[in-house]
Image (cartoon, rainbow, N blue to C red; front, side):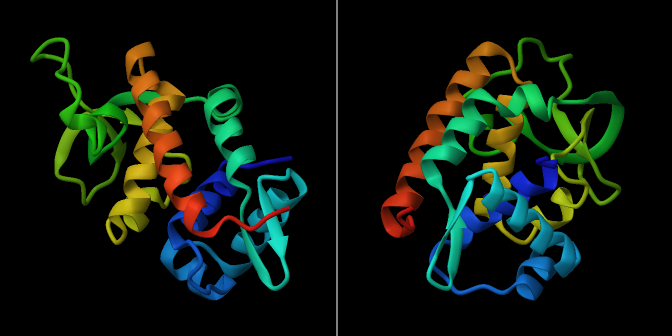
Length: 181
């Protein structure tokens, strides 16, 4: 059974590309334990969202895209909360933040709750609790996570834009390093 952190790990593997990685390195970057990363990769392989080729494991880009677009919001739906300090996400964060103007000036942005965040907004539970901290160190990873959040909990137009952007980004990453099943 997939867990939200499995998608979190897969999105990091998308960004890592063909750069060599170890479970220990990913664990540090993702703020997880190596055993959690290993278990996530194992579940992703079983779900056919990742593929092993020789000594390399990477995302199965077509299957991952299909899951992100059609299944994610039904399995790992968005949980909203109260006003809090945090890190912008969904259409309130790059790359979608420049494409959308809030419906009203009173509409607060969506944020991952984080005491180190610099924006006050409506709480939006991240895919994995360590996302705010891990995303501060990797802009490309942060942007994939925010696009996924727009798919999980955005309005129809935000979802459409996020899906288009996810497709383009996955296609770009895949053209550089997709292992063939």
